[in-house]
Image (cartoon, rainbow, N blue to C red):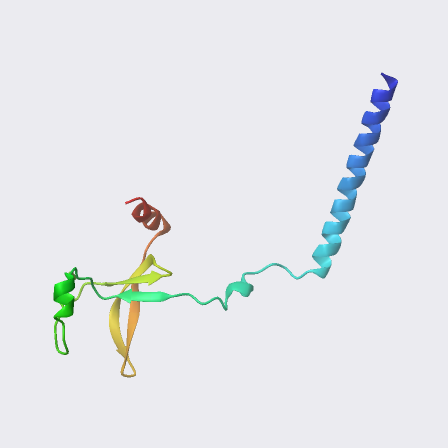
Length: 121
């Protein structure tokens, strides 16, 4: 029984020493390393898609399209445009013209709860 107590005491001593080493290493690394920020993701490229509307057509109808053809969309004029980032619906907006180019003004950001709910549907 005396051997078991000696081994237990020695193991506790090793655990205490390991904890002290970890604390010293953590504080030393913290003083050398810069604080972690999200700056490293600022250059990541994302695919942003603005959807004006959708239409469902047969192959025959698509083959009959030509220059000047009009495709009727499901959305009504004036309805908000859907904005997707990497295929995920994240916002709604309205079309604007800025310096003779089209743009989108964000009018509504989809809440995380609504995004999760939409995934389940």
